[in-house]
Length: 442
Image (cartoon, rainbow, N blue to C red; front, side):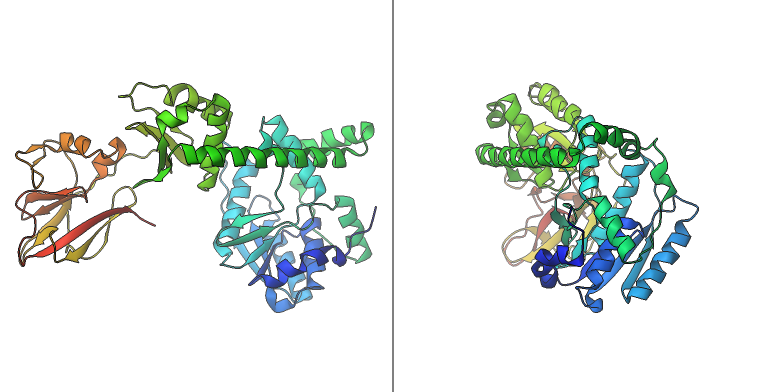
């Protein structure tokens, strides 16, 4: 086996040199210690910053942070450390710590920046086996990607074709010291169990298991790429469109696809929107419960970071989880300043010389929300109707109806979000008008 050296990174030099700034995830362990040391021989110090995330999960966490700072000072490398609070959730402690760590990286990266992480071939093997045991499909079994977008920048893993034993040899040759996290020996963690208990047994029977598993991961990557191409072709047929909140596609056209293509399309569609792709149970519930539901039903599939709903012959994908409608009292408004309203939306007004909501000096504007019993006569209609019925007629999605801001002028309902202006409140002649916009906040 060829020894690892800094020359191994040479093929990546064009990418490294093109980056605005380089960051290295630096835990102080063997892998990141070797990567940082190798990079320091290739990259000018002013272009490189080590990033240490202190999870606070070990009594030695603060000591490790101090050691990492000392080692960066010895290398002449800039050092950033950030402490995070890790809370165990349904995905377990390991995943919670990972989420916090990547959150730090994503916030740090600016446009054109590159984050390098020291995952190696043994990590790839563990990941593929772990995902296999969790029942992942081709995309999951493709393993850890070499690169992907992260925050405003890009993530790169240049050591994925290097074995851990090669990194150990490099560290010993160069007299490097590294931190040994005592939790790595705790086999009650799933990945540690694979590393400490399962893989040594596999190695006795199949010494070349790394190459075999990595080859399978490559096949799965090819399959995942093909499935994505099929999903993108299907996407063109189902009439995807951007909504006020989220995105939607045609339910009748979606229903024409086979179940396998429906599930594949959902996974790719959700992933395209940078949402965590849910597992098999959520996808199957969508196909079994949401798609065939009666037309007047309002089924909801929620997996914490996203929702799938249906309305008006369309399937909606909404970012975020189900939350109760915020209780909000009336609030004054000047009609010009954009104002945050419940649900993560913004109400704004733009001056218009051609219609819109009438603005007269001395009028008192305020924003309210539905409380029941409101009536309105939209401009141009012959009679008034309950607001509840009007929102249905204007085809506002049911989950947005309690969030629609109502604009009152001098105590009378004058406009409903940007759906319509009530009769008697439309600017005419030389009166100043205000065109309302009710948008999801960026």
